[in-house]
Length: 62
Image (cartoon, rainbow, N blue to C red; front, side):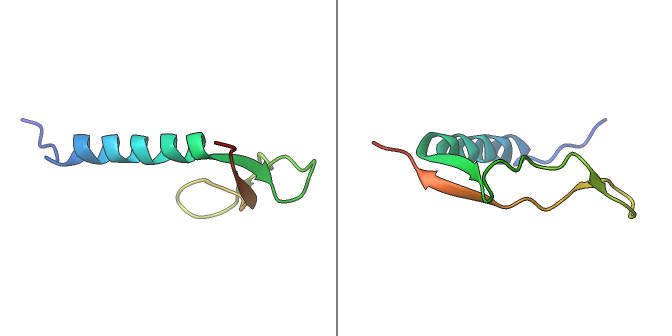
C-alpha cells in the first residue's frame, strides 16, 4: 500500500493558483536587457541547480 500526504493535492492547487496569478498580474523581464538566463548548472552537490538569475516584475496594465 502506498502512503500519500493528505494535503498534497491542496498544496499543488495552491501553488498553481499562486503562479498563475503572478503570470496574470506581472510581466517578467531580465534585470539586464538582452541577457537571457544561462543554461549552465552550478557544479557540485547532490542535485543540479540552475544559476542565480535576477528578474524585474512589472505590473501589467489593468
